[in-house]
Image 1 (cartoon, rainbow, N blue to C red):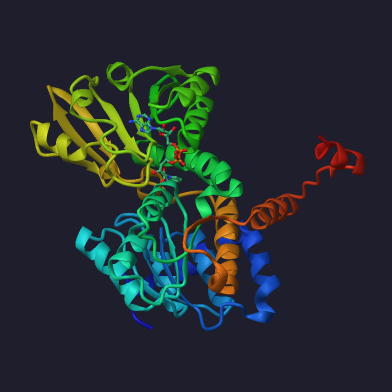
Image 2 (tube, rainbow, N blue to C red):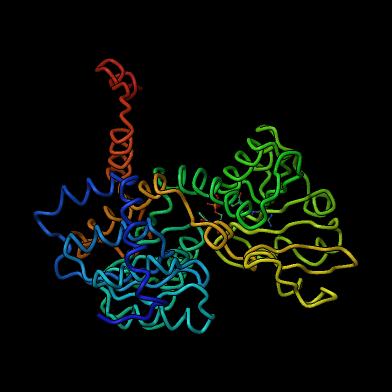
Length: 410
Ligand SMILES: NC(=O)c1ccc[n+]([C@@H]2O[C@H](COP(=O)([O-])OP(=O)(O)OC[C@H]3O[C@@H](n4cnc5c(N)ncnc54)[C@H](O)[C@@H]3O)[C@@H](O)[C@H]2O)c1
């Protein structure tokens, strides 16, 4: 076993967090139990680039107990939880992750995972896929991708005929984005903002940039806590949706002077930029929930601030712009993973059930899979939905024969 972590003494704390998360993620546990006797991942080397959280440890331990050898690094330089990294390392995984990696260290950790010669790669954001492609993806038979931004990058590779192995877009399963992107990010983004700032949300103007799955979750949860939510969009249909869901909709230039808190949820770059910073009111708070730290133009913010940023606490920096104070959370990186602990385990159970079943699918079918971005097989999506209902003790109706016939009649 090789690896680099912050402190192996944290392994026991990590184990307890793993056990706690596992107790809330019984779908993953059930999939593991169902497959354990056949050890379907024996002989498979898996490369993971995921946020190193307690929920990720449940996925990694399940894959390990199905026979896989695993190397894992963090999907963000600031999101790794050191106790979990220590626990996984102690369990015999090759772990290259610690909180507070520099950019070069972050990329080195990904290179270390590729040096392990994985056969299946599982990524969150596309950095591992991208580096694998720069190295000609030798030996890689297939991959999976966890998030919207990563799927977009893979689709671009596919469009230019540069994709080198089949990938399953786990993000696009209904049992993933409807729950993880919306309810998971909705709750954990507010968790991150509140842990960092301790502010009262009730009565605040909270601007949500982007009304996709993440934006919908953040907007709905913020309203639930009494915030007055303003949505900005570039897609007219999403904008109407936001309006009819009861939110104010306006361009970012108009939202800038109105907002007390801004949350970017777009997967786009420079969504909040100089012209907006200059119009913001004193004490505005800026946070990002999108995958990359490009949505708030932080370089520009550092540039136009009349003072060096003042570190208020580990997750708040103060800038002075035009005599007004602007507060940036988590350096503009995913606030729910940097200032809080990422998504709740119940929601990651759905996402990682899709991941585990997709990895098992690739292990079994990679020879037959076309080199393209695949949807999660419908049966997997349906199964994850059924397992989830079972685990919540919820039963639903089934179509009667007459309804089946009616459904398929012309
Ligand atoms: N923080 C997390 O834990 C987490 C979880 C899931 C997804 N994500 C990331 O969040 C981002 C959004 O994911 P999603 O699934 O909601 O994507 P999505 O495609 O469903 O939604 C993005 C929305 O942003 C809008 N948009 C694009 N540019 C904009 C701009 N300049 N101003 C306003 N709106 C704009 C789009 O029209 C779209 O409606 C991605 O980067 C994704 O990878 C983060």
